[in-house]
Length: 118
Length: 114
Image (cartoon, rainbow over all chains, first blue to last red; front, top):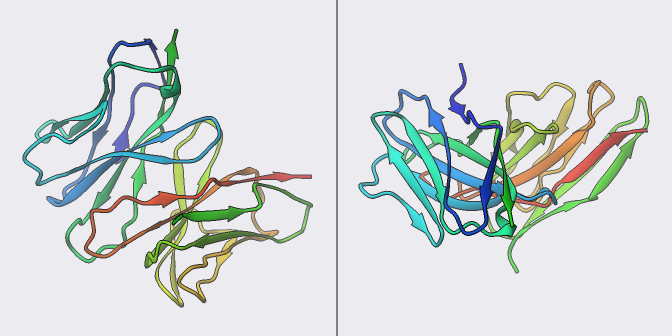
């Protein structure tokens, strides 16, 4: 069974508009962390934002925010005021067993390709 | 600047040949990871290491080997037993252990078959 599901293979957004990229996850571990990464066409993976399962507030980092709905097991990434440079592939990832001795392994979703139109 | 350096950026392998991908980090991270990415796909874990002289298989370890003789270095060898090695390979590191810190990635190596 997929532990991380990103149901949108491709998305388009108009420049300066907001866009939401979906991510749902599956775990029975009460302690986990969710990460979003951006991968431009050049290939490097850029860390964007993190949300812990025990965090009370939704994470925000500049134009990025995370809509964390624990009961629904979803952690959607919201990008506000889209820019042309936001065109990339975006990956949601999960680490289980946070705050216990763990391997630090990440489980990745299949990714969503975002294209920002001028 | 602290970071992860992968080399080479592009690598070509002949049939029956072993090739080694380099990964070096100066972030003083304990844990290091190797991922494989096929076109349009997510990342799959090949091997990981939480400490020097110790490493574990990930989800797709067959046809690959690693070593961890130094904290800074985690080279990956793609052996001739890996029948479909063409892919993008990413190395990552993290503080590991009791940590919510993200993994940091290198710029990747693209491996192709000649």
